[in-house]
Each structure stands twice: as structure tokens, then as C-alpha cells.
Amino acid sequence: MTSTIHRNASPAATPASALICRNCGADYPLGAQHACLACFGPLEIGYDAGRLGSVTRQDIEAGPHSIWRYAGLLPAGQDPATRVDSGTGMTPLIRADRLADRLGFTAPLWVKDDSANPTHSFKDRVVSVAITAARELGFRRIACASTGNLANSVAAHAARIGMESIVFVPSDLEPAKITQTAVYGGTLVAVEGSYDDVNRLCSELAETDEFESTAFVNVNVRPYYAEGSKTLGYEVAEQLGWRLPQQVVAPMASGSLLTKVHKAFKELAGIGLVESRDYRMYGAQSAGCSPIATAFEHGLDTVVPVKPTGIAKSLNIGNPADGPYALDAVRGTGGAMAHVDDEEIRAGIELLARTTGVFAETAGGVTVAVCKKLLESGRLDPSRETVLYNTGDGLKTLDAIAGRVAPTAVIAPTLKGMRAAGLL
Ligand SMILES: *Cc1c(COP(=O)(O)O)cnc(C)c1O
Ligand SMILES: [Zn+2]
Image (cartoon, rainbow, N blue to C red; front, side):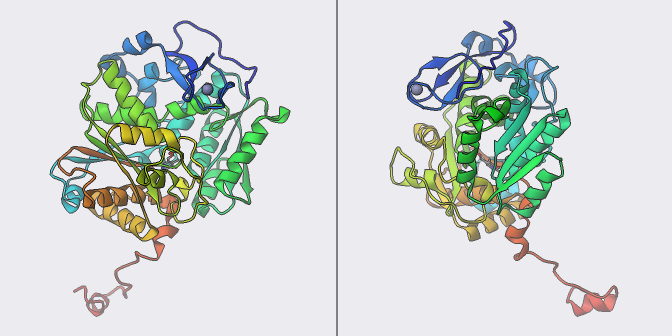
């Protein structure tokens, strides 16, 4: 579990200072390690408060138009020469007035549209940071266990810098996600099993000698990978004119994204880049895989694993590693969680498309539908400024709504044809 490969200590390099166990607080030197040797708890990047605090709005605004403008707040990529900049980040924050009207918001509602990333999902953020860290740590190959979007992004980033890649996915993935991974030319292994089976296999592989110089983005370099999601929080704050929203709704698979947006908001307030403000975190899952939302509803601290089903495949992690931390973030901020079924997800995709012009994949449908449900049950406040995270592109999951939408009419190329269809 501990790799012999360690970062070169270079004083001005990184604001990261250690790997810290989220369970017992033990700390370890920076490197490719993801679990605590004392309690097996997950490790997280800890920062030097002074270095973080020296970052200014001006530094950030003068940086590249990508997540790397926040390099001073990230654990890798301070040196532009090792940084893998695929143009990820600075995706549109869309003021969604028509959606706000439909849902009954009186305060501004925003959609952070991460389908605009290079491989069309938010995963480009975590992969850009993970592959940069992997390169800095001396790894020669990059790998992952994926529910689809991660596979797309790892294969693409590896192709861009000419690094070898090996990607593992469940064999029943959406065809678009298989094709969009295979096209980049790395090794793609379709495993006959669920994501959780694939993940277990990757954890075993990461321990073998043959994989010693392979960085599994969501296994041995997971602490670095996870920090990439913080940029979803930084960008929203910057795009709002350096302030925090009052409510955010985020989809949950492992629960990492949600916890890191929360971490980003706390950091920004902590170092004075934004004024601190009460905000609430809301978590969204599908009924086919809702271990975290179910624990929330039952008031439990532990997450009971499930066997995932349903159309929101990118969120189908039955045994979510960051579930307990997502519960803490949501409970600690006074938010809530909910889950929605496949019909509600499809309706959520349509509602978003028809009111904002954003075509989301199923995960985006989950977020919109959960927002609606939480409003209806009175747990989300329509008078508080709210951000919805759309994390992926609808073109990746066309099958999910193919049966619901179709041409209004098929006509002969004549006025008569128009009349026959009742359109003239
Ligand atoms: C991976 C993924 C998420 C959430 O991931 P976490 O494991 O919770 O960080 C959300 N949306 C999409 C589209 C994803 O691919
Ligand atoms: Zn520990």
C-alpha cells in the first residue's frame, strides 16, 4: 500500500504538507498512499495554512483559463512543466431563470455545467490533478476503475501526454462511454461484474509487483485525485464574483465530489478569499443506488452497501468510500439528501434541457429531480441562492431518453406534407 516512489521535496513547490487520516488523524509524508497504516482509514491531503493563505484573488485571476488557475490551492501542478493542462475547468455557470420559475425559486438559481469539459464530464478535473501528481511522483502508467466518465478522461489525458493507460470498466456500460474510451487507444478492460467488483480487482492489482509503477487514480493516488473536485467549489465562488452560494445540490457516487466542494468553500472562507456565509450542501442519488441518501434518511452514520441498478450508471457505486464524509458535510451544514427513480431522472433531464438548453447525462437528471423533490418536501429553500451541478453530457447516455423524445412529425418535403402533419 505504501509505494517506494515519493515526491521530491522542493520548498516552493506545493501548499500540500502531508497525508492525513480522515478517521484517526494520523499523518504521513506526501506520496502514493491512500490508507492509514494504523486504522485503514482513508487519507486526505493536508495543507500548510500559511501557503494556502498567501494565495490572492489576483494570483488566481491572472492564471490560465482552466483549473490550474487554482494551482496554489492544489497538491500538484505548481510547475507548469509537469502540469497536465487539458483545458479542463472554467466551465459555464449559467443563470437558470426559466428553470427557477418552473421550480418556484424566488432567489437566483444557477447551473454549473461541467459537461463543457474536454471529455464532457466533471471527471476531467480529478484526472488532470491525478495524472499530474502521478507524473510528479514518477509513475509510468495510469489506471482506474470507472463507472464510465473516469475511463473516458483517464484514456484521453494519457493519450495527450503519451503515458501508457489501462482502464477497467463494468462490461455493461453505456456503449458511448465504451467507444469514447477505446478511441483514445489505451488498454481498455471490460470486466464482467459491477463497479464494486471492478474496484476490488483494481485494489488487488495495485498491490502486485507488475503494477508497482502504475498510478490507479482512484486507488493509490486517490488523495490527489479527490482534491481535483475542489475546483468545482472554487470556480463557482469566483464566477459568482468571489462569494459563496447559499445552497448547492450535487450528485453522489462515492460521495467525494460533494465533500470536496464543501472543503473548497471552507478553505476559501478560511483564507479570506470570500466572506464566510452559511451554506447548505444537498446530496443527490438515484433510487437504483442510494446507499448514502438512505443512510441519511434513516439517521445512520454508517452506509450499508447495495447492489446498484437503474439508468444513472455513472453514479452506480454500491459501496461508496466517502459516504460517511458526505453525510457529515450534509448534516453539518443543515442540508439534506434524497433519491429519485428512473422516470424522475428522465423528467429531470428533459426539464433541464427545455428550460436551460443544457442536455445532461443521467447524473444531471438525478440532480435536477432531487432538487425538485427537496423543494416539494420543504427541505430546500426556494428563497436562497442555489447552484445545481450538472456533471456530465447527455450525448453519453442517449439510450436513457431515446424512447421519450422523437421528431414531432416526419413529412414529405412539401407544403402539403406540412399541412398533413398539422403544422401549417
Ligand atoms: C463520478 C461522477 C460523479 C460523482 O462522483 P463522486 O464519486 O461522488 O465524486 C457525479 N457525476 C458524474 C457524471 C460522474 O461521472
Ligand atoms: Zn487512521
